[in-house]
Length: 313
Image (cartoon, rainbow, N blue to C red; front, top):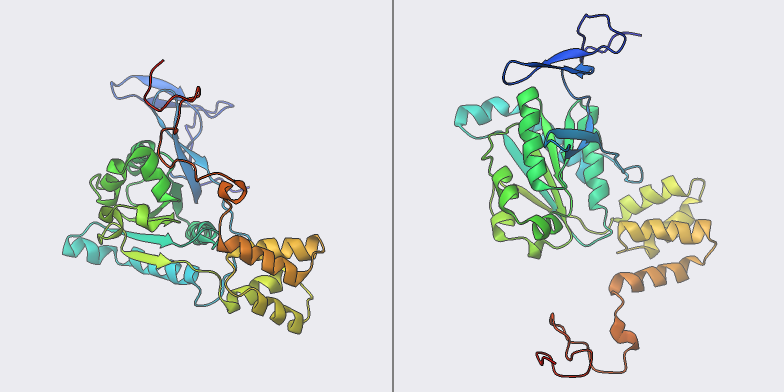
């Protein structure tokens, strides 16, 4: 087996390949096997109990997403490749070398699968991608990564960015999106089901997210390609019927339809009608309530003993 060129060996000959790590004060501490760069892949960011950044392999879930020439994933990957190649022009003009894409649309239309497919293409090109779960942990990890690999292209992923902002605020994210940390050669990919929940400082300012791309229900070409993969051997005329009946269904509903009919033996037209009714509205407790609608505020209408709200006993 050929040696991995990314591995750095101490030459000490010890059985565990330990090395000496140089500490900031000039002291030394033993460490295990090292690499000169992270293997191409997707990672989540974390910290150990001492606040040191860690990068954990992140599985990608894009097996069911269908690609074809001219599809959105292929167009975004082409734009990313052009962006990497334009580094010199960015530097000559005096701009930070970074780019951002925000994908939005109703749930179930495949935004996460789309992002994971794009990341798969990025990893296949030998690059790395990092998923952000906690903005402050993420910021520290990205600065640490750049200290080790200052030139490597990277992709950063912010799935359900509105939920991240709701939980942690937008201060750290805005610092990152504005390039305040001078971490360059970066492409940011974000998704949201609720673009209206994002402050205009995020969605309406170029150089934070330069492209806002709406992800709708799959079109007829996508549905035909998906069904051809899942229902192998199905006659073309029958598949065309499926394609016609599923107009307007999101990606998740399309997958459920295949399960309902092909796996569970349910009727095609009845399953389509059920999925379209589910897609049209969400369930509510008002469906079985005989009384007035519940109070929409944070406080109940009465205390548990029946006394008015605010009355102390």
